[in-house]
Image (cartoon, rainbow, N blue to C red; front, side, top):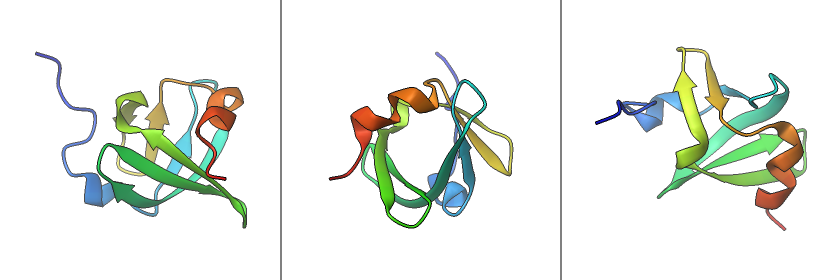
Length: 76
């Protein structure tokens, strides 16, 4: 059974998020059910499914998808 990428989801709130292409995706502002809400800049937000989280090194969360796919998860 694969190990969970994040053991305590509360620890990732206010942490930076990087896409699989190493691009800066934004900062996690909320954990809600099976998604993380990420804010980019002052007005763009994304609800990204937790299944795309590859890891957390203590300071940054890594995703398995690139920044170019974030538009699919943008909060309107």
